[in-house]
Length: 134
Image (cartoon, rainbow, N blue to C red; front, side, top):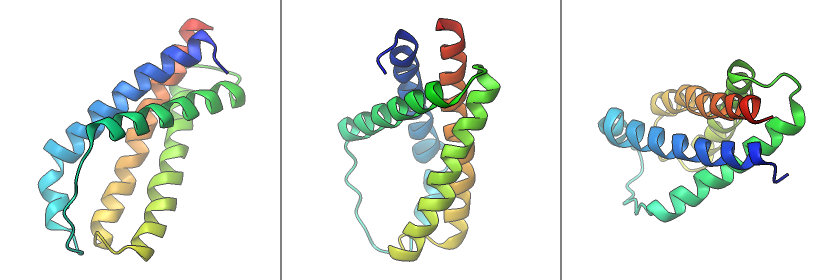
């Protein structure tokens, strides 16, 4: 569980999740998502908790990847991460759309597709790091 490859890949994937998430949701698509908000909310962002959450996600992904994969590498990691993105983006995203109604359907689909690439890239980093350090 606490192998060198797991710890290093956790750290690198957490950094990637933080940087890509910040870049996408603040710079690239921030205006798009703001224009598609259905419910009136005032988000209070906490960089500390976002970073902790990214670290926890990366740690879970690194452990699952290491235990469930035989051929380590960027491609297998990307595929693994994309499935995690499908689970979170389309699975949990659809449930959140059905229960919270914060975003409209179009923005929920955009967010779900983004999750495939977002977690896929993090998974690719985990796969690549695990391959290099195992």
